[in-house]
Length: 118
Image (tube, rainbow, N blue to C red; front, side, top):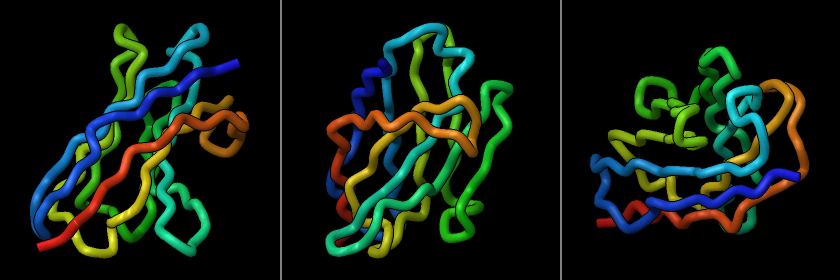
């Protein structure tokens, strides 16, 4: 079982930046692919960024060039740097672990709210 704890959300103005963090238990963290999902009210939960165990990154088209996913295996933590935030980025953000960026475990953290508003 993998336990996930997200943090770093908050209220930010359009054009601003936030960095989300997700710490994961389970071993070894370095073998996991990690992903960030988001869910806006009334919408499905979608993958926005993922990073493989070899640190290959994947991004949804809507966040390419604005979001950067990274990982620190020594800290068992994955990050999501979000720049140039837009109103439509408002959502609850969740991280997820998996065998690969195409095969995810069905464990979720509590999520962290990101609100982009002026």
